[in-house]
Structures are given as C-alpha cells and as structure tokens.
View 1 (cartoon, rainbow, N blue to C red):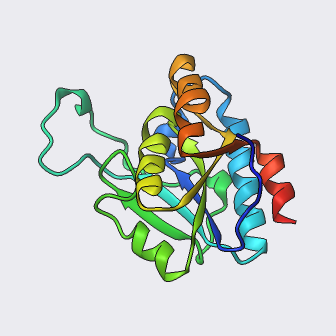
View 2 (tube, helix red, strand yellow; view 1 turned 120 degrees about the horizontal axis):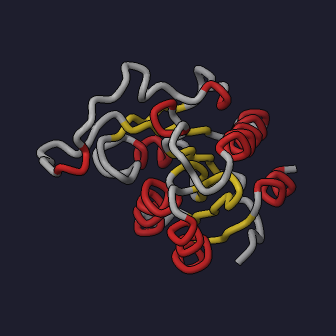
View 3 (spheres, rainbow, N blue to C red; view 1 turned 120 degrees about the vertical axis):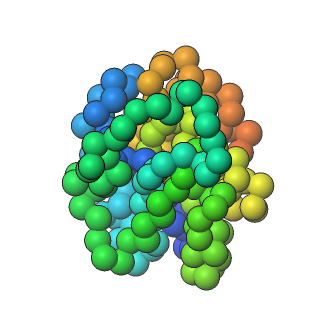
Length: 182
C-alpha cells in the first residue's frame, strides 16, 4: 500500500548504514541507497523532525553462535559519511537485529510524541524488518522507503517489500515520501 499521509510527528529511522555493512555485496547499488537515505535525512532535519541513525556494534549479549565469528575493523560501526550525521540526530547503537530491544529508541521517540516512523537501511529482511515488527507491535505507524533499503539477496528483499511490509505499514519510494513532507 502506498503512503497516504505523513504524520506531523513522524521520525526517520535509518538502520545499519555504517562502514562495516555498506561495503557488503547488496542487491541494489549502495550508492543509491545511501543517496536516498541522505535525502530523507536532509528533508526531515529541514522540518525539525527527528532523525535516528542506528548502527550495530556487536551481537546480543550471551550469544555464542558460530555465524558471527569475525573480527570487525576498528571503523566497522562508524556511520556512512554520506548520511552527514548531525549533532541533533539521535544515535542508537544496538547489539541485536532490531533497533528497539535493549536500546532507548522507544523512549526517545515517545518523548518526542512520535507516532509514525519512516524506515530505511540494510538489510531489508533483517535489521529493517526486525525493527519494523517491533515498531508495529509498539503501536507506531510504519512507512517503508523501498528504494532506500536493500539486502544481500534479491528474494529476501522482495519478500519483505512485497509480502511482509504491507502487513505492517505503507511502502513507498523516497520521492513519494519527500512529496508528503512538503
């Protein structure tokens, strides 16, 4: 379902667009994803709407899975410079797939009376979808910027965009979302 309206209390939440992840081989060119996420961030900032930038700094405490056995580079969690993060942006550093559990994201959004979030980032089927599911469960209106997110596998990306996201909110393009901000 395309976006019908953008709430005056909306916030932008950008998931995992950080140096250690933006270099991965994704389905869509990362330059376009970063460009669209940065456009959304500039537009939200211009209207004094909250911009939340999420990075992942580790895995959930206590996890011992073999799937996360690598030593990240020292700048792995640094935000992608294309986002042009500002001091007023809220940084959420997470240790889980989604951005709500174990962070202050919900408290931050509620303290600003946010009722709707626009999601962008990577990966569509993991960090974005997990964050969306929590947001939906917490009662937020969720909007997905479909061309400001990507995944490592096309079938995973398409499944989230076409099947999972329409059950939780509205899916539209960056340009359509920007048009609703004016």
